[in-house]
Each structure stands twice: as structure tokens, then as C-alpha cells.
Length: 208
Image (cartoon, rainbow, N blue to C red; front, side, top):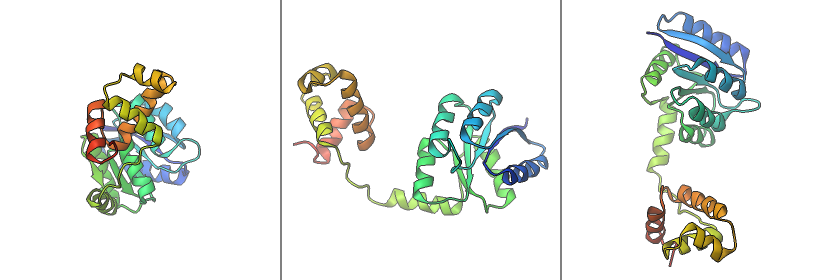
């Protein structure tokens, strides 16, 4: 059974070259292509590919936002980035948004073929340069989370047992705003619920 593939890149020459490469592989079938993220999203929604091979920096919708929307709307598609950019500002947001792999455009064609097959199988694929960058970031000490004054206040109320509604009343804000503050707090502390947020904040000295 062949791997169904969509190519998203704003350079026609790149798309043509990739399509020509994949024609040589009996088990890899290009079922669609697009020149930016919005069109790529539409093609992926229509074709339901196994893998979306995409560049990052494209006019209109591109980068991590495109990957995030693709993960939401076509969760079965694996996103494999193929780009010339290997900086932290590109690699980490792309992987965080849901990309399963990240290759550079100077990768040998056999490496690209292997990466597409691996991505279709749910395996993470990183070029050596990208893997080294990710590893160095993982090994580096995490900077302390910085909560705004209002986020600290909200978390302090939560730590005292207040519900979202009670915290909203105490601060004269809406319950929706409290939930938004909590979502930001969870992201900054790397947690997913109220109890973990309070524990993390105490552990890091963010609450008295």
C-alpha cells in the first residue's frame, strides 16, 4: 500500500523537483500540492494524505501556525518539514506545533524517501543538524517561568482554593478571563491542571 503525500512549498521548482523524485518510488504517491499553507490545508482536508511534506516560511499562512491547524483539521496526517531554515525560531515551534519530522533541503534524496516512510509509520525523523540543536536545548537549563502580576494573583487565589467564578468575582473580571490567565499559566509552567500549577509555582518560588 502506497504512502499518500501532499507537498506544500511556495517555490514551483522545488515542488516539481520533489514530485519528480517521488515518481521513481512505487510506494510513494503525490496526491496533491500547494504553494502556501492555506491552500495546503484545503488540499490536505480534501485528500486526507498520510504525510504532508512542507516548507516553513511561505507567504500567507506558513510555519508553526499551518502545522497546528493541520494537526487540528487532519489529525491523521503526519507533518514532515523540509526547509532551509534550522534556527531555534523555526525548529522548536514547528516540532511543538506537531511536526513529526524536520529535514533540511540539502538532505540526500534517499534520506528524504526514508523520512517520508518513517513519518507515515509514526516515527520521528530529524536531520543530524536539527537533532543536535534540539538535544542542546533539552540539555540546557530551563529559564525560570515568568508570570505576570495578574497571573500570580490568579494563581494565588487558586492556591487558596478559589474556583474560577470566585477568582473572577474577587478580581472584578470575567470567568473567561480567569480561564485565559490559567491557560497562560499552564503553558508557562509546563503543566496541564490547577493542582500541578500550584505545586509547580510553590516549587519554583513563584508563590509565597
